[in-house]
Image 1 (cartoon, rainbow, N blue to C red):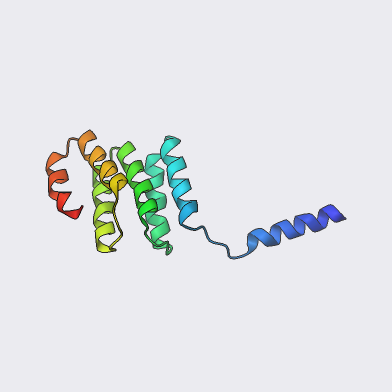
Image 2 (cartoon, rainbow, N blue to C red):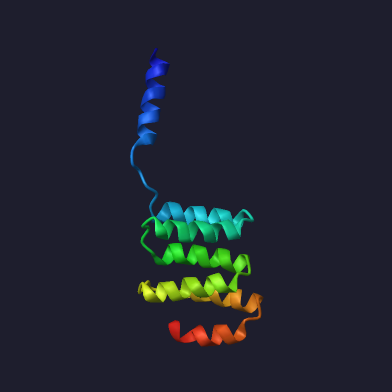
Length: 118
């Protein structure tokens, strides 16, 4: 009977309206990127923003690292422009991740054009 109560409490705890926060999304994006699913990380990033996640530097950097690993220069550029539009601060990891992607995909012109955003 006690086990039944534990299962009931466990169910109630998880059915509450608990939403993931910035650190949860950052960890998930990083895990997807390192786990060989960088494209899924990009999907999760945009989905989280649509669901109301505030764009922060760590979240954006995790998405940029994933798009770099996926060699998705268009997504990297979109993330950078979205950061600019949202006035999200950029740091060294932001620029390094973005430029690494541009270099891997030989998008030197796009990289040079984006430099004023830093």
